[in-house]
Image (cartoon, rainbow, N blue to C red):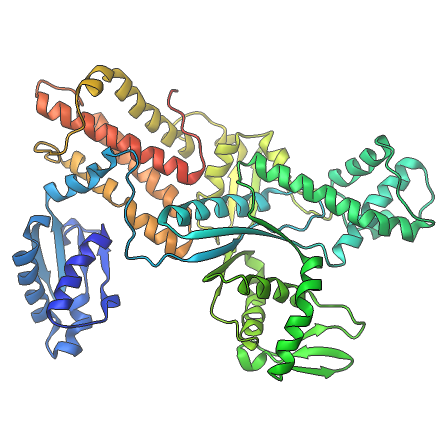
Length: 547
């Protein structure tokens, strides 16, 4: 709706020959006495027009009423210069009922469509995915769905951290359990190994059961031989688990070790040409302080091995060279301090300006009123497959995006599994089932009544107009998610939409003695049902049509 209303002000700016349309800011009001929407555009034009904001606001009001009077019930001006817009009922009905077309979606023509690379899980292949990874996955899923819905070309990518020391640590962990179960003497001690999750021991048992031969003359060689086998096994497990969450396959799985082979020479050649490398204490350093980092960074350690930062830089150089307009990474909130060095490194290569990093916080699971303690290395992480044994995956999805992604969250398993209206997941599902029940109850009327294209009786009741207004906020929510990549905005909107519908339904009959009103209200329910379907689809949650 804000996009539609902004066109009114674009007309005014064109009238006064003011080119910067970015000054248009339309806000939904919290107090109905100031209309449905308000704007402070008069303040922003004050310097340009050399007038007081209040005088400009009055001129804008005159212009609107002269050129767009059908859209508004009234337009008011309040000191010191706000323009308040009261939408006409006809305009509200006209826009909300666009959902009568099951294929309807807003145009989003004002948004530039981008070629986007989005990397949003990228867990190390050193064990099973845990509940924190699930939050990354579901946040990413909804963001991708919304970006594609808007019309962006989105390319999803999973970065496989298979080039660092963690792969050796994984192999040692597997071998420790393998030797233990086979009664083979080993130099490894339990306190020395890095991973203790049940999946590590299970994989060792699998190797034994399948009689898979671990090549090598001694323990060191056998551990080296296990590195690739273990990495491939857990990567395969990760892929299966993501499919279990209904995630579409990633467009590209990028191997860190392969990237280092492909990009190393190119990166060093560019840095040398730009004179952005130097050597100190036997290590190779990159000049990034001059590009915004707090200090220069080591790319190659004095033992000749690459730092993690270099591998990460290679990943983003590879993306940049594939021609994306925007590269988005979803990182853990504890990585905030790491971003400046990557941004500065890309600037040093002449590749700055395309990377944006979003952050996400961890999840705690509450069960029997106690927090489930989690530590991947200690083997106490709550794995996705464990939590899916405790709750339906659609319920899990709902709660994983029910809070802003940077907020830490708790999921109470007992509450999440309650099948009553105290559970926000089931509240929405009950609302959806009620809508479908209504359409089924009046199936004959729905079949007989052609979808209307004009409405004269809708919107004359307070709760009805409130519902119609809530429906037209959908486009604004989608645009906000485009800007903020925040799926909780859609969950919050969905919950509010369901609440307003239920309040409306409790006060008003759909079918009454007024046949014209009955027809229009059936159309309203039909349109609302289509909107519910659209939102469920964007959330990746299956609707329950009968409860």
